[in-house]
Length: 245
Image (cartoon, rainbow, N blue to C red; front, side, top):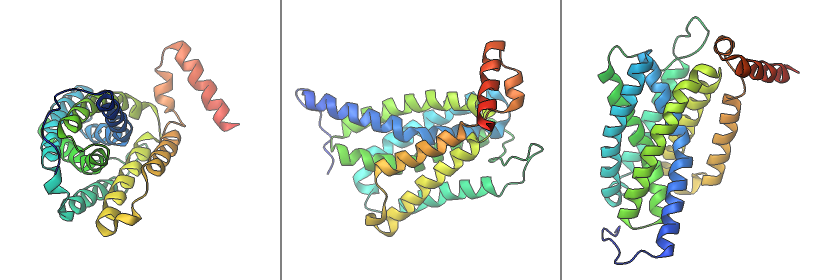
């Protein structure tokens, strides 16, 4: 069972474990952040996108804390991980099979209102949390530490997702890269259901995500480059020239 009691004294080891949990949350939140940012693109309005992210992450926080508190029970049922895996893989399938727009790009779900996007944001974070919470429990059995790490992780997630909303417009391949990393998490959850021995280690997942992100940031959108301030525009064009050489 996970320890629900707070310690009488905080030891240096406790702070070290918290630091590890926060670092894991931040690293594992990168693909989650880009997935949430990509989902908000379906609103096609920057103000609504940020509102959906703020409200959706409030619900996501409640669901994530509930998952942590019930983790010892949830982990005993493989059906939860299977549902999370199928949901994430459905998002990926829906994206890559969507009809291309006028810019020959795929797109995620389209929403006609703010409240259509919010449940998907909360559910997507919950699906990602099935993976990250399992990792956190492997580091510490103290629930209060995992809750604190998860709280800091949600704050980091909001910050990163906000950045990705802007970057998705700026970088041509970034949305594709985001959904590819979502597929990694979905496959990882699916493998955990089939056989724990088949689950790839964290270092391999982080390496794969980093490589896909590097590709995602490799090409800027020419239309966005033209709207940049002059110094940034020159820098972007130099990068584009060097990519073609």
